[in-house]
Amino acid sequence: MPTTTITASTQLQGPKKRWSSYSSNPTCTVDALYIYPLKSCRGISVSNAEFTPTGFKWDRHFTFAESSGDEGGWSFITQRQYPLLARVRTELDPRRAVLTVSWGWGWWGEEFEVPLEPKEEGEMVRVRVWKDFPEAVRVEVELEGLRRWLGVRGRLALCRVGQMREVFRCAPKKEELGWQPVVGFADAYPLHILNIASVRDVNEKIKDEIPHLSVLRFRPNVVFSGPKAFDEDDWKRFEIAGMKFYVACRTVRCKMPNVDDVTGERHRSQPDTAMRAYRCIDGGAKGMACLGMQVVPEVQTGVMRVGDLVEVRERGEHLYIRQ
Image (cartoon, rainbow, N blue to C red; front, side, top):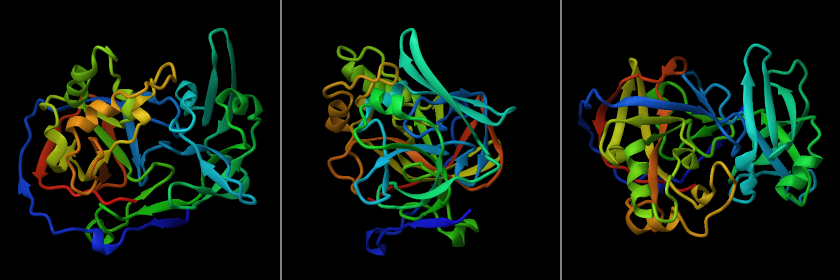
């Protein structure tokens, strides 16, 4: 599969960081694992997850895209524009190698199935993902009912990864890993990790408005428990089941977590306002709240399981590099 490149000016790299070694408390464990086969739609909880070069297998392997106005142009869509995507459910059937997508209200609903690994390729199109325009495969499926339900005014398409995007910015370089990290339709990095204690700390500040702030609003792949809130802010490297992981940067937050992951309703201000009051901690993302960490596996194959121990090996400074 070909690749395109996510780049950043070398002037934005910042000073070299000095790392210190650190061994974590053994009570830090993997609490939950999530895969999001269809970008910005409801995820799937799994007990174990297999690695590929782009992160967990099938994660962000598909995206919905709308016509961008340019002739033949498409742009990815997310809950930022269409919050009802939170109600679009996904289900993987590895035995039949299909993805089932369903949506609706109450007793009414619709669904369709698409193959995970089709025998024949479809039409190749360019899909804008932030500042990148990777090639993707347009999947032949009827989407008119879903288009109206979501409120998309233009044409709507379902696209499958056709071209992986190389990641630079805060990621380790090819000279360090032996390969350049890549993603499919993920925003920027292969994995997103989240500390349950950090989410609870945020929730404590907004419990009058949102009594239960779900971790799923923040769309993590790995949720861990054990460390105190925000202990992860300076993680640089950690190990799980003997596999090594590089912590590229903090996760800089937009307002998408304001969308309820169950109802698809957008809160007028929270948790964004609360997080901006005390979580603007990264000099590379001034005025932006941070919660969670972006991660690059230092292995290309492997399996992570719920209950695995997380061992922090290095800590150090982070400086976010913008897209």
